[in-house]
Image (tube, rainbow, N blue to C red):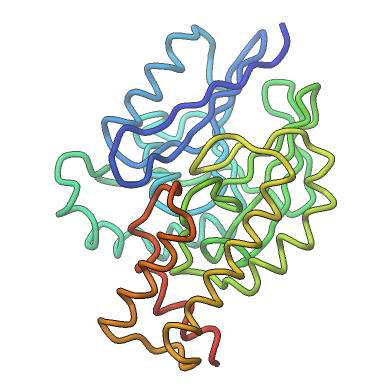
Length: 274
């Protein structure tokens, strides 16, 4: 059978994060594992319904909404879990803080502990999982956190699993990492990604190479509005942050994840005026 890609979108109301199940004739590969107990159990139920073994799990980056649910997919780490060393390191460095920050908000929906990658891969390495070749690109902190990867699936689909490198029709989380390095990476990796027909992303519908320019335009608009609202200082007051948020929501009225607009404003402001 031809390889099929199943998308699972989480039901929690804030992030609507995506995870993917890649299915071929013999096995499954899961890409990212969602955030909450309910969603990761539902993702596992979808995988179980396909009645094939899980040959591996790919973690694109170390944010909780992409890695926490591994706890319910492979609680003993008894399947290969692939990630960059930097992704594992970021998970190790942030797990305790994330538990403290978010467990109270999510209550019983918060995953109590993380399951770590057990197969570490390097930039440019090609690994074969369930007979499917994947080439991993380490893009460093030029994304929405300090450790990000792109996974290029080189079968008949020519698909790219790129985590949060692109937020399609969604406001973007920029509170970690660097928006300027992210812009640089969008330019750097565009020629490589153009060879892949579909990008499977963490937030929003799958997209294609046209989404790269949309993401770049969003960043430029965001940065311009930060400087405009703060009169070039990058420092917000309550009033100027409110006007900035209103301007961004007006510019992108159909975009999801609206809470992210104000969330990232201070961080981007500081970066722009260093």
